Length: 107
Image (tube, rainbow, N blue to C red; front, side, top):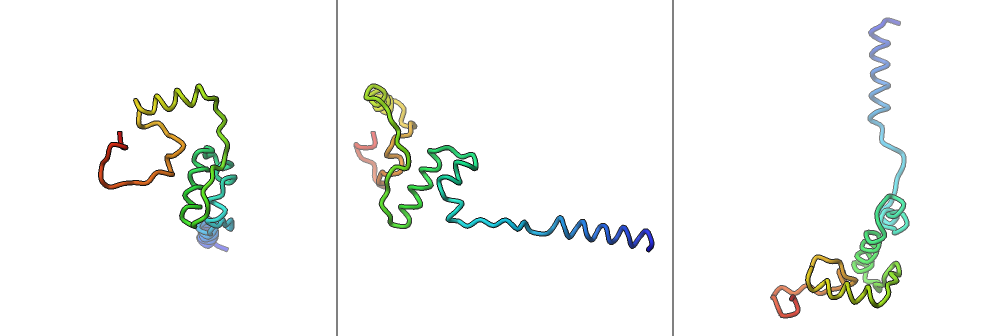
Protein backbone atom coordinates (compact mmCIF):
# COMPACT_ATOMS: atom_id res chain seq x y z
CA UNK A 1 0.00 0.00 0.00
CA UNK A 2 1.39 3.36 -1.01
CA UNK A 3 2.13 6.17 1.40
CA UNK A 4 -0.60 8.34 -0.10
CA UNK A 5 -3.20 5.67 0.49
CA UNK A 6 -2.05 5.23 4.10
CA UNK A 7 -2.19 8.99 4.70
CA UNK A 8 -5.60 9.22 3.06
CA UNK A 9 -6.92 6.27 5.09
CA UNK A 10 -5.47 7.71 8.31
CA UNK A 11 -6.95 11.14 7.55
CA UNK A 12 -10.33 9.62 6.70
CA UNK A 13 -10.45 7.60 9.93
CA UNK A 14 -9.30 10.61 11.99
CA UNK A 15 -11.97 12.81 10.39
CA UNK A 16 -14.64 10.16 10.92
CA UNK A 17 -13.78 9.82 14.61
CA UNK A 18 -13.57 13.55 15.25
CA UNK A 19 -16.89 14.32 13.52
CA UNK A 20 -18.87 11.46 15.07
CA UNK A 21 -21.50 12.57 17.57
CA UNK A 22 -21.19 11.76 21.22
CA UNK A 23 -23.37 8.88 22.26
CA UNK A 24 -24.33 10.49 25.58
CA UNK A 25 -27.83 11.87 25.60
CA UNK A 26 -29.70 13.81 28.23
CA UNK A 27 -33.31 14.89 28.21
CA UNK A 28 -34.67 18.30 29.10
CA UNK A 29 -36.33 16.80 32.17
CA UNK A 30 -32.98 15.54 33.43
CA UNK A 31 -31.11 18.75 32.62
CA UNK A 32 -33.58 20.89 34.58
CA UNK A 33 -33.54 18.66 37.64
CA UNK A 34 -32.24 20.39 40.78
CA UNK A 35 -29.76 17.63 41.67
CA UNK A 36 -28.34 17.62 38.15
CA UNK A 37 -27.84 21.39 38.20
CA UNK A 38 -26.11 21.29 41.59
CA UNK A 39 -23.85 18.43 40.47
CA UNK A 40 -23.05 20.39 37.30
CA UNK A 41 -21.67 23.23 39.44
CA UNK A 42 -24.65 25.58 39.71
CA UNK A 43 -25.69 27.04 43.06
CA UNK A 44 -28.74 26.03 45.09
CA UNK A 45 -30.34 29.39 44.29
CA UNK A 46 -30.03 28.73 40.55
CA UNK A 47 -31.41 25.22 40.97
CA UNK A 48 -34.34 26.58 42.97
CA UNK A 49 -35.02 29.28 40.37
CA UNK A 50 -35.12 26.68 37.59
CA UNK A 51 -37.35 24.44 39.73
CA UNK A 52 -39.79 27.28 40.47
CA UNK A 53 -39.94 28.51 36.87
CA UNK A 54 -40.40 24.96 35.57
CA UNK A 55 -43.27 24.30 37.99
CA UNK A 56 -44.85 27.67 37.21
CA UNK A 57 -44.85 26.94 33.48
CA UNK A 58 -46.38 23.49 34.05
CA UNK A 59 -49.06 24.84 36.39
CA UNK A 60 -47.82 22.94 39.43
CA UNK A 61 -47.81 24.41 42.94
CA UNK A 62 -44.72 26.48 43.67
CA UNK A 63 -42.92 25.72 46.91
CA UNK A 64 -39.37 26.56 47.95
CA UNK A 65 -36.93 23.78 47.18
CA UNK A 66 -34.58 24.44 50.08
CA UNK A 67 -35.14 25.79 53.56
CA UNK A 68 -33.19 28.90 54.35
CA UNK A 69 -32.96 29.12 58.13
CA UNK A 70 -32.23 32.60 59.43
CA UNK A 71 -32.77 34.16 62.80
CA UNK A 72 -35.04 37.16 63.22
CA UNK A 73 -32.15 39.63 63.58
CA UNK A 74 -30.69 38.75 60.17
CA UNK A 75 -34.15 38.83 58.56
CA UNK A 76 -34.73 42.29 60.06
CA UNK A 77 -31.37 43.62 58.85
CA UNK A 78 -31.99 42.23 55.36
CA UNK A 79 -35.48 43.74 55.17
CA UNK A 80 -34.18 47.15 56.27
CA UNK A 81 -31.24 46.95 53.86
CA UNK A 82 -33.55 45.97 51.00
CA UNK A 83 -35.18 49.40 51.23
CA UNK A 84 -31.77 51.00 50.71
CA UNK A 85 -30.49 48.61 48.05
CA UNK A 86 -33.25 47.29 45.75
CA UNK A 87 -30.87 44.89 43.99
CA UNK A 88 -30.86 42.49 46.94
CA UNK A 89 -32.52 39.18 46.14
CA UNK A 90 -35.54 38.69 48.33
CA UNK A 91 -37.50 35.45 48.72
CA UNK A 92 -40.25 36.85 46.50
CA UNK A 93 -37.92 37.47 43.55
CA UNK A 94 -39.84 34.95 41.43
CA UNK A 95 -43.25 35.34 43.05
CA UNK A 96 -44.02 38.97 42.28
CA UNK A 97 -46.54 40.24 39.77
CA UNK A 98 -45.10 42.52 37.13
CA UNK A 99 -47.26 45.58 36.64
CA UNK A 100 -46.73 47.78 33.61
CA UNK A 101 -47.74 51.03 35.29
CA UNK A 102 -45.67 52.44 38.16
CA UNK A 103 -47.18 52.73 41.62
CA UNK A 104 -46.19 53.54 45.20
CA UNK A 105 -45.41 49.86 45.85
CA UNK A 106 -42.40 50.18 43.53
CA UNK A 107 -40.57 52.30 46.11
